[in-house]
Length: 307
Image (cartoon, rainbow, N blue to C red; front, top):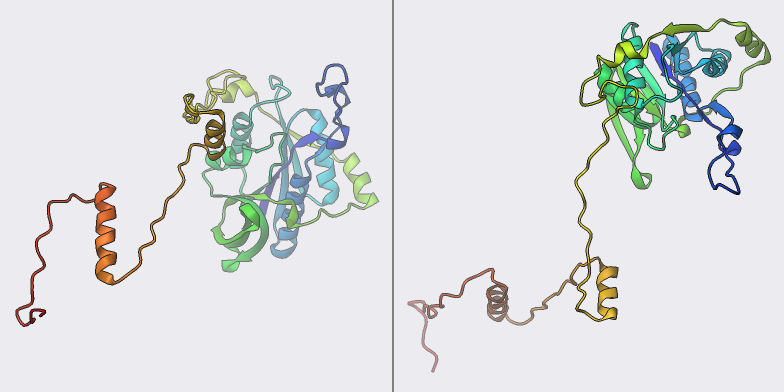
């Protein structure tokens, strides 16, 4: 199985400090490390290679500093590593543009699986895997917590994490793109000889000029300049405002309830005939039925009159 893993560098949470005078993050003190979820993705790729054979290739978009992360992946056991960069790249590029460049590189290679870390990028909700799956035209499965081979190596049996601790089990055909949850595995420790060998290894660089590929992006994704991503414009949500004519305690109750009216219930008891009449009267009162008059009760031909 040929696996491609995308890794990125993120700030180390332990190095984040806020200036006492400015109240802003001191970016000069930030220390960048390889994203821990991305290392879990590399580990899973290595385990798949050990089970089914194949090759693990690691890609990292970014400046020369990302070579430290690529050497870390080489020390873990990756077969090949590539750094993707160009002379006109910015230090931070939008995820949609980075995914488009990565897709162009990945399409030139044969792959069965693309792995990314769950929320492995510098964004809280990492959009890069979704963009990448769209450009590659492969299915995307997020937050994978368990992965097994199925269908003779032609498919995968996956378990993914849902909200409130629930899990979903599904089958997926390859090629596909998966985001790995950190609970899936624990990255292996690299030996000292592997680390020394990775320091001396050469890291291949794929030169791609960003200006040459931005023109190929769809207009609805990128507007042609390196900072021209079109922002989302969701529909505004209505905000409930209490009635100003009500007293303060009533307005507070309305704000606490969000303007929702309390539900009323009607308990109907008695014989069946009385219950039916009460239900019909309730429906007429609420406007669900129209009262056009009720004809007299028809008497059965065989029934006897009461004395």
